[in-house]
Length: 514
Image (cartoon, rainbow, N blue to C red):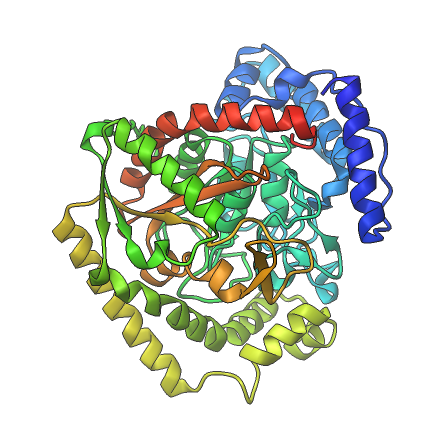
């Protein structure tokens, strides 16, 4: 970012602030001293630190300066700079003494604040747990740490991970790096904003019903929701024992693969598929009623895939079973949420009861919980068991039809809309003023992957005319994680160049992008 861009950025942010009546203070942007380091992916940064091209301390310092530069995004809820730098210096000492270096040597990684960390509190985005300090790291954090990763800080999120906007009324809304008036998606909005704004190349997120995939789409990132159970989930406040799954957000599929190799304890390399051997299917039901810009950008991306040799088949009414997924997922989450939260509070000795937690919930979370989770609105046991049965039927149908069509993945826009404005919680604006229900806009398409337990990779499809990113989800069968990542590596090679070119042009015009 040059000096002129810094001035433009500051002016634009100030204009948004004044228009919204926001109270946050915007400081002048300072051009980074080590700008080249900010563009490195996780694989590249680790390799450079291992070979001594630059120190872990220098890299951590550069990322921390970027955090300060983009403080307006409110991506982090808590960050201990001294601890990060101390860990980076220790990594440098280990290298200088000829120690064994891990696959994440010296890499600072932001962690969603629903994932337990021993050195930092885990609030789950809610007031009653602000000072809760777990006695141990979540298992996935332990695996990353064994390979040399540094917990960079805890990222802001939608309260209790129970929402799609990351509009946290207690700790402040997370803002989208592409337009600070808009949501980065949720619930893992802080992790996505941090990676998109180049505060780090790789972050830990978590997905129940789109909480990795929506932020990836809205922030122009690659995201991976693995098959249910592929990564350990202990030490995480889950909303549903049937759906929750920790996973990564990154700027490249190569970095998603690195995370997967470590979190899945499977170091085997993953090679990209050949484009002319890839076959994907488009469920018509998930391409209906899209914001015109979402459809235009997504269809253009599909055309590029076809031109590169990818087989794309459209499936019509035979896949309408997918439309039952949102109600099935909603019923199961609504039934399991309270018991899942109570179990976390008790098992991790938080000293907080569910009633204590509920009493301090922010209004948007409390309203949603009242309307879905608590009596008299809570689903009955009979409705829950019927939803579990229906879930099995949908999974069986999707599996059999994907095999019948011989496709590696289903492909569809992650959301029916672009990133909503901050404050749009129950309805989202499209088509210059038309309002649609948030559950349809944000929850409809991502429900299928959760319902079936699919391995899903999200890739950026391109930018809308207003400069906002749009992503496509490529969902493979449960257990097919390595194949989906191989597919992602191949498709990213096709879609990446145009996306990068378009994003750079947009950055030049708006100067708000990372």
